[in-house]
Amino acid sequence: MAGPRTLEPEQWELWHTWMQAHRLLSRELDRDLQRGYGISKAEFSVLVTLHQSPDGPMRVGELAESLDWEKSRVAHQLTRMENRELVERTDNESNGRRSGISLTAKGRSAAKNAILGHADNIRRYFFEALTPDQAAAIHAWSRQTVDRIEPDNGTSTSGIATK
Amino acid sequence: MAGPRTLEPEQWELWHTWMQAHRLLSRELDRDLQRGYGISKAEFSVLVTLHQSPDGPMRVGELAESLDWEKSRVAHQLTRMENRELVERTDNESNGRRSGISLTAKGRSAAKNAILGHADNIRRYFFEALTPDQAAAIHAWSRQTVDRIEPDNGTSTSGIATK
DNA sequence: CCCAGCGAGTTGACGTGACAACTGTAGCGC
DNA sequence: GCGCTACAGTTGTCACGTCAACTCGCTGGG
Image (cartoon, rainbow over all chains, first blue to last red; front, side):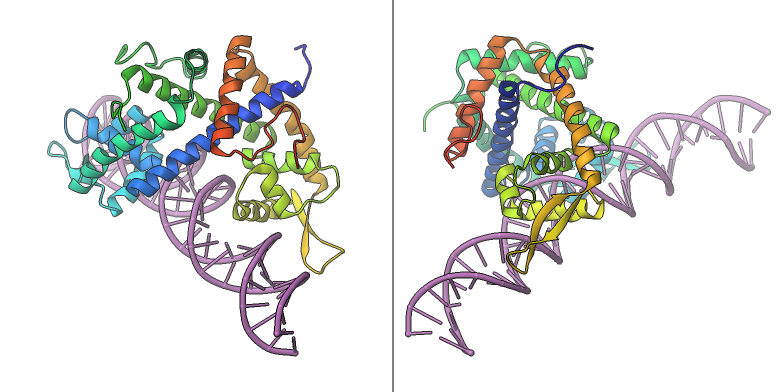
């Protein structure tokens, strides 16, 4: 409709700085995870999700939904992690197909260590330099954005949500 | 040192929501760029940088510094873009090595179109749902973070900076 | 029985990104 | 000239992520 077709310089500046901050932060966290625990961020996400699973082995579909990843991405990731012996695909008793994903001992201990270290890093890099105002602003914006792009999502107050 | 070794639930919630918002936003912008103009975000960045270059061809090092990418990443990206005829590596008159990067006609027009559309999308997805307070808070935090992780950086007000 | 179609999961192709090792040119001291 | 170092750029390798095509088991219709 109306409006200038380009951004104001200060808008550009804000956008650029915001993106850059995010990129630098992600890079630091990735590197720390890699150096400290020898796992990548993607691997970390999978390990945490499996680690927190209450009912033992998960299936690929569950993992995909829980992480909000595409199934193919999960499958690729699991293949790599299976090669590195962090997870294993186990036979499911009820039907013939192997469809259970579970942590190996190695995967479980990696998860345990990394969770603590990672939380520490997040606090160091993100929360320590965050005033309450900023936290509120970022939180509000994040929720708006998530709701706008992907409305059906359990981002509500603090936990479980509808499903 | 001291402090709890894990994050508070509300901190986790903020962190998770923020990461998710960022991911969804990036994905939307990427897809729009791809669908609307047939170029990726990485290609877009290179095209914009070259397009804005005042003195014609740039060199790989300049590009890398300007984008804050690793040189190898730039080289790989240029190889792909050269194959797609968006840029060309031209001989540099002063020394024998081919070291100039410039846009092809195709690249130039792609850049021109994409810049407008992309700015539009950024406004739609980012600025429209952002109050002035939020913008200020986010801007402030971003600058702090960039300065903290990468202190020597031209993030000052609006342009050129020391170098 | 056969086969069409579905849903879950996998695979392949391709672009992306980080890191390390390599090539090649220029400059310096001898 | 010779060797050495520094630096720019390239290449290889591996992990990551998306999309499209595929496999496999299960069903339901004929």
